[in-house]
Length: 419
Image (cartoon, rainbow, N blue to C red; front, side):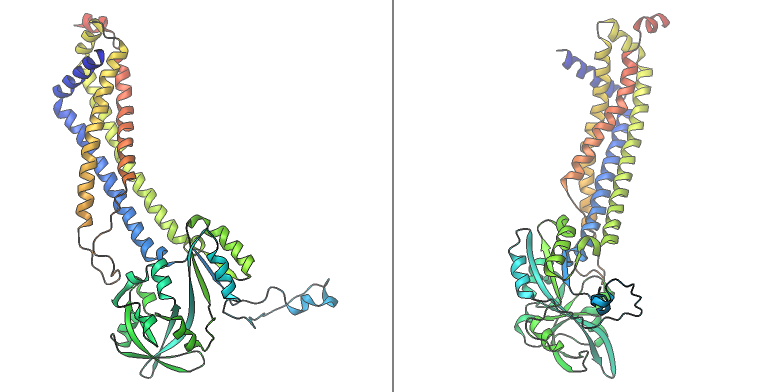
């Protein structure tokens, strides 16, 4: 019974100060709307960049780096074992770029339950012939099915069928910027020279656009067999093993383990993209900071409005206490007012935030640098709506707590005697 009466009194006070109540609710609504929209847009941007870079990057990359030997011959000689060695101008020699015993390595990786899959790759520096000019480029020999399954390769082939690389002999997919430089189209032939000066004719079957033009100016893709033929190696020649894990966070530790186990160099995705991840984290932090600041500002608005309401309703509060309402009951009345403002403003803000996010999501965003992106990216994750709504209720609760405590301490005798 008393609870219904408290709610009824709170509703009457809200309606009596309807304009101020609406101002407070609009403040919360605007804060929630901007919080949801800002978080959705910034994290949509992060997701887009993840798609452009991280989704195309192996969680673990196994390769053989070209580097000088850690132990020189003189250090292995018994006669000089306990001597100090001063060796200058050490050169890399005898290094092989291919991964040793690749068949056994792939079998071991495929049996690891932590591994989602792997894709072999060959990195082959070549020269594209453009008349009398040689353009430096790289042919990436790939297993197109593994690349499509693990690294979304098909999404970035904007013209042509990516599977033609596997089915059409001596074929190649060119980076769109490289194709524009060579002035070739689908069905044309390009000529490449390997590092030994041998020349090969390849049929263009597609164009690839990564969204990073500088990479598209040099990168191209061919089948493993075609690339092995170009570099003059056997069919077990592989320079890179790209591994994708079920849990990305395991990459650093597993990369170290694989490096020791398979006696090759390794690189994890966190190390390879440390600067990129830092940028994504900074954008998210800024978004949360701005959104929370807006909610706090709205909380101060509610605090001021409730303070003014208490000052103007001193007589009503005194009458309530004189007729048997305790200080606790009066405090509940004003807490109901504060939380009601947060609830109404929060729900309205969620709806307005979703509508504004949807509006942004439908704005055309066409740029040659990002061929796979058609509209501005927005992330509709429910957690942003939950976080904003909970924080709105907490903000309004604490904004109403101190004025409500002040109202509960009003002495009705002093107020009535003063009148």
